[in-house]
Image (cartoon, rainbow, N blue to C red; front, side, top):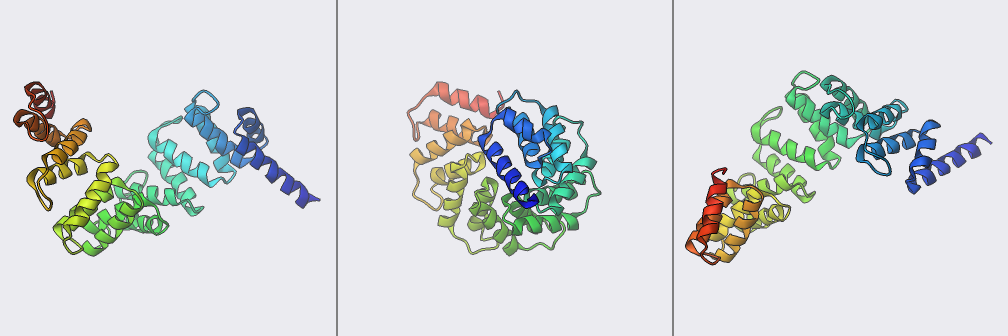
Length: 283
C-alpha cells in the first residue's frame, strides 16, 4: 500500500511540474516536494508565472536544497556567488557548490574549479581547480573543457602541454563554446598543438564569428582584407569588420572607417568614415 501511495505521489508531482501552474507548484512545494520547491524557486528567479523575486527564489531553493535537490544546491551556490536574493558570500557559495558536485552536478564541478582557481570561498589551489575541471570536462561540460585547455596552455595546476590544450579546446569548440572556437582557429593558424591548417583555422573562426565573437569577426575581416590564406575579398572584409564593429571591437571600427574612407568593399562615405574612426577612439 505504501508503495502504491509513493508511486501516486510521484506521478502527481510530475503532472504538477509539467503543468507549470504557479498555484499547483506552490501547493506541491508547501507539501514538502523538493522538485516543486526547486521549480518554484526557478519561477520566482526568472519571473515565470509570478513577479520576479530573488528573495523568494532563494527561500524556496534553500528549502529544496536542504531536502536534497541537487539542482537547488547548485542554485544556492550561484545565488550566494552573485548576491542574488541573499548577501554575497563566497564561503557559502563554495559550500553549496561542493554539496552539489558531491551529488553529481556537472555544472557545480566546473564552478568548484573556478572557485579554487580564483581563491574565492576557499584558498587558491590550482591543483584542486584542475581536479574539478577534469571531472566536469570529462562529463561533457564545455566551460570546464575550455578552462582545462587554458590550464594546459598556461601551466597552472598542470604541466604545459600544447597537444592537451588543443584537445580540450576542440572538445569545448565542438560543444559550441564560442571562445574555444576562436582559440582553436588560432591554434590551427599557428600550428600550436596541431599541424598548421589555414582552412581549418578559417572554419573555426567562422564558427566563432557566427556565434557573435567580435574577436573572430575582426580576424576574418583581416584575413579577407589582406588576402591571408584566401583570395583577397574587400566585400567579405567589410562584412566581417562591420559585424565586429557593431559588436564593439575597436580595431574593426577603425578598419571599417578606413574602408568607408577609401571606398573598399563599400561606397565612399566620409561621414561614416569619421563616425567609425571616432567610435574606435572611444568617442
